[in-house]
Length: 417
Image 1: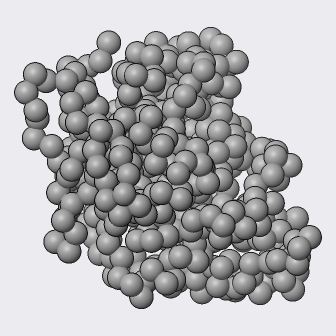
Image 2: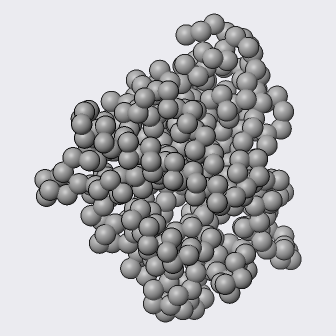
Image 3: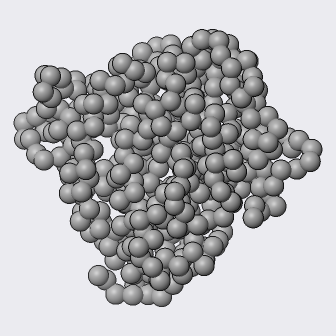
């Protein structure tokens, strides 16, 4: 059954599903989204930027999938993929990133980047991921307490990115810090400034440029070398394209897994019977990652621009209109997800769209994310079976990421692996 906060009220609640304070206070505003799905599935919403009259908020699963799959009608390149408006000169640079591309440019770039995320490349990371998970647990095992976010959930994907890029292990903390700076523009504890975000991006570009030069001089069996090497058609990423890829990898490859891990652990704290179920049956590690991603919906929204007059959810959309899809809402849509407010780690099938709604921008790192989640939770089951919440978590102030920035936990002290 849906919690009281998630049930649709008889009268319309005040609708503001992009206020970052709302997400910091209580996470996804399910009461608002449930009402919208039932009464106004494609809702005209105010925009924080006065230059834009507003945007269409898309809240139902089927409509989010429609927008995601019709890149010809809903463009990522026209005005960008993020909620905030971009300056024209910034868009010129951003359109070199795969996130800001439409087919056929996106198709060509993705075919090049895919070679770094083949099943073989991901499979060979499994033991590295397992070693990293146990190293992180080793660092806190004898203390009996930790901050689950900063000690386990956040460093894990940052360290895996180092493995992917073949970067020195001592660069782990640098990548972790950069990621915080890039995504924390609405949270004063991290940066609170888009200018700081731009400065951080410049540091990442410089770092990626050095890494590219190193990998061209000393090729290895890693994703950096694979991306810089010409493919069968003779195409290879330029230095600038590689720098932008590293920027996306540090943000997308880090924040999504980090927030799914911490959001998943919180879900287990709120539903302890599911933790006991997983302790008793490790085969559920096959389905648990997808339910964790559905429940936590680490990425809250993306933006598209309408390229031709069309109809969606009973509303007339005009060319140039701004459209924002909300994954946290779609992942709790009763029309598609059976009993969506029940956290069920055995849910199968699980038609969530936490990795995107299909189409060209379906998450490139889906298999890696599933691997990281299954491995880290397996390590936690082995090493911290009685892990428990020690204080209410503190959430990220962000309407883009459903994030937790601090979550104190306790457990019986144990020895190093």
